[in-house]
Length: 154
Ligand code: HEM
Image (cartoon, rainbow, N blue to C red; front, side, top):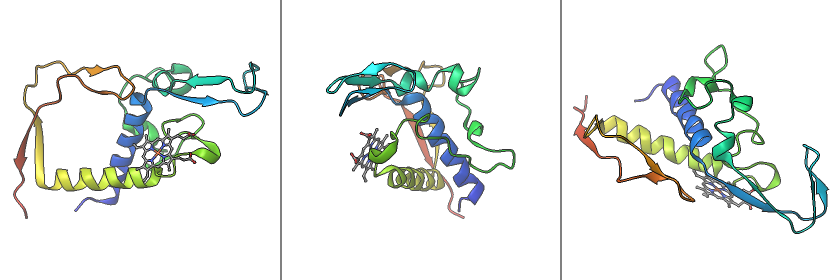
């Protein structure tokens, strides 16, 4: 059985993953407007934003922005500290924020908890380089080959 702290760990990992590996999205302007940085946009303009780039910006996340460091989502007591969805944009923000966000997190945690409860996973080839293909959705080039060994059930 996973302890609550391990669920927190899974939650941090999800955040860290989505912060680094969501590519891009776009919006169409409903009316003429001015963005917070002073840029004017007109009705019908399409505005693209790039969570992939935002997730790597040191200005937003600090000097170690590029590092996979799930602890960054914890406060000093080790409790999960959610970030503004306008900064952590994987699920977007505002009235059209992803309706399935919590469902998606729950689903991923249950899947990971069950998988890790029954199997130990190890890289098939520890020396192989792991790269992703830059496409609309990111996936691992050539796949990530793992060896799954059943855990002894206690
Ligand atoms: C990792 C998984 C997911 C990611 C990264 C994700 C991300 C997003 C993003 C970026 C949007 C666009 C929001 C906008 O246009 O401002 C969105 C919309 C939406 N998502 Fe998700 N989503 C995920 C999973 C799910 C799941 C599992 C469901 C349903 C069970 C779901 C339901 C929706 C719905 C209904 C909308 C439209 C909301 C609206 O336009 O009002 N999503 N999602």
